[in-house]
Amino acid sequence: MYNNILETAAFLKERLHARPEAAIILGSGLGSLVGEMTVSAEIPYTAIPHFPLSTVEGHSGKLIVGRLGGKDILALQGRFHYYEGYSMSEVTFPVRVFRELGIRRLFVSNAAGGTHPDFAIGDLMIITDHINLFPEHPLRGRNIGYGPRFPDMSEAYSKDLIARALAIAAARGIPVRQGVYLGTQGPTYETPAEYRMFRRLGADAVGMSTVPEVIVANHCGMQVFGISVITDLGVEGKIVEVSHAEVQKAADEAQPRMTLLLRELIATL
Ligand code: HPA
Image 1 (cartoon, rainbow, N blue to C red):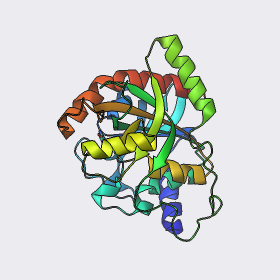
Image 2 (spheres, rainbow, N blue to C red):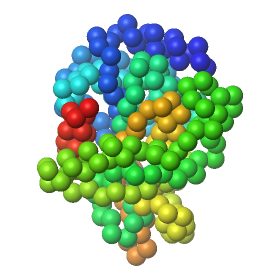
Image 3 (spheres, rainbow, N blue to C red):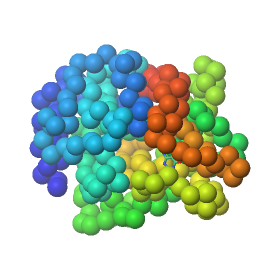
């Protein structure tokens, strides 16, 4: 796998004009940030050696090279989910390629179900920490030398980036929540009993992504910033049927706020 990472990084290096300062992984229906970028290249995953292919609706599967907030960045429009059948090394492959490109900051977004009783649909939640409930650990197996065998996870989400984001949100009047994201494999949304269990375990939001990439980014020594759009509620008394279409609709509505926050945050790098 290490050779594949190097080959993919070499392929991309030839197509970059500058060393990107950050990479962004855009979650389900959260690709519109690309509209704010000055795009210099769009590379479909199909054209990138060793890249897995994205299959889920709302993910168009492109690597975008360009500028946002005055910084050179890469954006993944469409991520690889474990529930699609990818191995954990495929799900996290782009993160290691980013590291190989010299990128030390990763921004991740996702759609998530809120389990905090005060949350409302459309809320933005800055991820302060996570709980990994995926059935397989992304670092299982021989340790790849980007980091130690037993990586520290005491600050999986950068306190510095969180503080900057909170300051921007306050200055720009963007309401934000903060909370713990629990990652689970999906593809089912939760039963009411599962939402209740996750709440008791300490989750403020639950989703089917992010945690594997964030673990690998930490292993690679990257600073991480994560943000969830609350697209549905797993809160007792507020649980209704959830559909992918409704999740997309809520994500759409929240995108401009999320994009503004991420753009301003990246501008501070
Ligand atoms: N559960 C899991 N994943 C999700 C949810 C949810 O309620 N909403 C969006 N992604």
